[in-house]
Structures are given as structure tokens and as C-alpha cells.
Figure 1: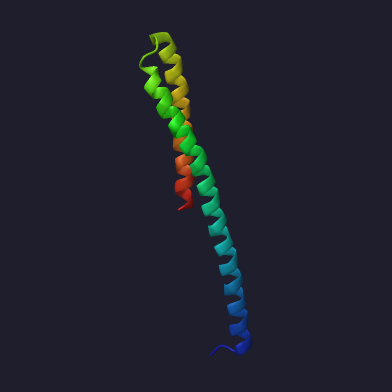
Figure 2: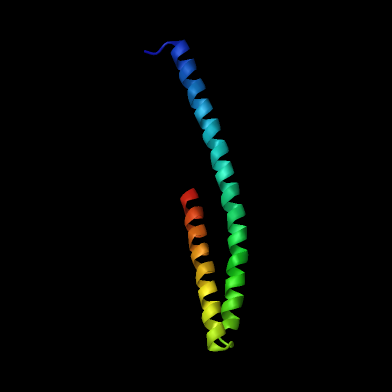
Amino acid sequence: MLSKETLDKLMDDLRRQRDELKLKVHLAKADARDEWVGLEKQWEHLRAKLAGAGSEASDVAENVGAALGSVAEELRRGYDRIRRHF
């Protein structure tokens, strides 16, 4: 059987851990939400550029394609970062 003092210490430790984790979860959600907003802007930019790339000359389209590939890769990494929050 645990003493009252041991139980009190256990409860204090659990309360402290709970409070720390609660704050970390809250901050992680806020970080993920902020990153999502930025990624959504990049997504819309990528979609708009892709829609316009089809009508450009082939050499210009190649340059646009390379730049869009970089943006797409950045988006993928951003989505991976958000996924790790969950």
C-alpha cells in the first residue's frame, strides 16, 4: 500500500506531466495550423502557375516546370511536417 505522501508525490508528478503535454499539444496544433495556412497559399500559387504553363512556349514552360517542381517538393515536405504533428 502506498503512503499518502507517496500518492501525493505521484499525483503531483502526473499533474505536471499532464500540464506540460497539454501545452505541447496545444502549441503543436497552432504550429501545424500556421504551417497549413502557408502551404495552402503555395498550393493555390502552384495550381495557378500550372494552369498557365500549358499555354507558354516550350522553353519557357520547361523553366516554369522546374520551378513548379521545386514548389511541389516544398509542399510535400510541409505536408510531411504537419503529418508528424499527428
